View 1 (cartoon, rainbow, N blue to C red):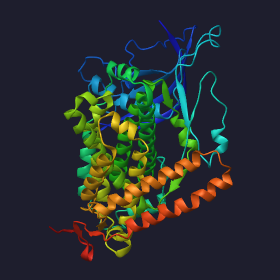
View 2: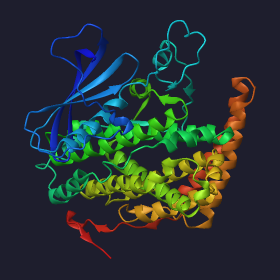
View 3: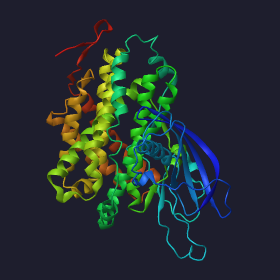
View 4: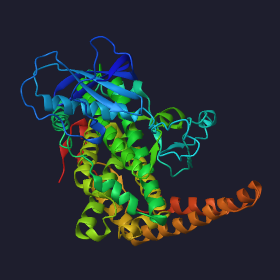
Length: 502
C-alpha cells in the first residue's frame, strides 16, 4: 500500500452535466513513511488516457468524496478530490472529474519519466517539450531548460495561430441585460441547454491505434503531420484561454452567457488536450503553460472578436467535416485515427459559431451600417487568405491524406462564405474565378518571400528584396478586397427589432 502527503496546489470549480464539482488540485509525493489514515484510494484511474471507470450506478450520498490520480512522473502525481453537490451515480461523477482533469492538464507542461542517475547520461529523452518563441517575450523564451528534456522552438509569424484578448469591461457592458434591451435571454438559455447536454462527453477516447499509426508514419509526412498537431493544439488552446476569461468576467453581468463561454472553454480544453496527447504519439508535447505566459496576445475590440471568432469556428467546422467525409469515402488515406473523430468534433465548432451568431444578433450596431459591411469583408478576406497561404505551404500534409490542397481550400472557403452570408451584412464574391486567381498569385509571391527569408543574404539585402514582393502581395490583397461584394445578412435590424427576411 502506498501512502501520500497532500499539499493543496490550487482549486477549480467545474460545471458538468448540471452538477457543480469542487475540485481540489493537490500535488503529491510518494513517501516511504505512511501518513496516518491517508492511503491511496483503491480505485485510481487516469482520465486523460480514458481508462475505464468503475461499473457502479448506485446513488452517491451528498458530500461524498471520490479521488482521481493523474501520474506525471515516476514520483509525482496530481490528485483530484471531487465533492458531489447533489445525488448522482459514481460513473457520472468520475466522468465529470475526468473532464475537469482534462482542463487542469492543459495548464501543466508534460514531463517525462525520470531516468536513474546511472543511466541518465546514456538515455535519450522520451519526450520533447515544445515551446513557441515570441518576439515580445524573449526573456521568457530564453528560460532555463528543464533538466533532462530537449526542447525545440516553433517559429512565430503572421500566419501562426495567435492568442487574443479584448476589452472585458466593454464586454460586460454589451451583455448587461439592463443596458442592452436587444438581448434575447430565451435564445441564450436554449443555447445553454444545448451546451450542457455535452454530446461529446465520451467521444474523445483513444486507442492503441494512435501510437501504432504514428510509428508507421515516416519521412516528410511525419514532420508535416506533427506541425499540423502543433498548430491545431495552439489554436484550440487559444480559444480555451479567451473563453475561460470571458466566462469569468461575465459571471455577474450575465450568468447565462458567462456559463456558455465556460462550457465552450471546456470544449476547447478537451480538443487541445486530445491534440496534445496525439503529439505524445510522436514523442512530443506542447508546453501549454509556457505558451500562456510567453505568447504575444493580440488585442481585438469586442466586435472584432465576434467577427474573427465566428469565422474561425465556422471555417473550422467546414475543414473538419470535409476531411472526415473525404477519408470516409477513401479509407486508404486514413493515416492517423484522429480524423475519425472529426464528425462529432466539428459539431462543437458549429455550436460555437451559432453562439457567436446569436451574440452578433444581440448587438445590431455591429451588423447594420456601412462600417459593418467593410469590416465583415475585411475579416472574411483575412481568414480566407491566411488559410490559403498556410495550407499551400503544407501541401505534403493534404496530399498525404489524398486531398488536392487548393481544391480543398476553395471548397472550405465557398461553404464558409455561404454560411457567413446568413449573418454578415456583406461577404466576398469568392465564387468569382478571379478571386481564386488572386489567391494563387498571392501564393506565388509568398513563396518568393519565404525564399528571400531563407537565403544567406545579409538582413539589409533581404529587406530590400522583400520590399517589391510585399508591395505586390498587398496589391493583390487590396484588389481582392475591392472586388464587388455580395450584399447579404438574414436579419433586418430596422428599429432594432429582428425580423427574418427570406
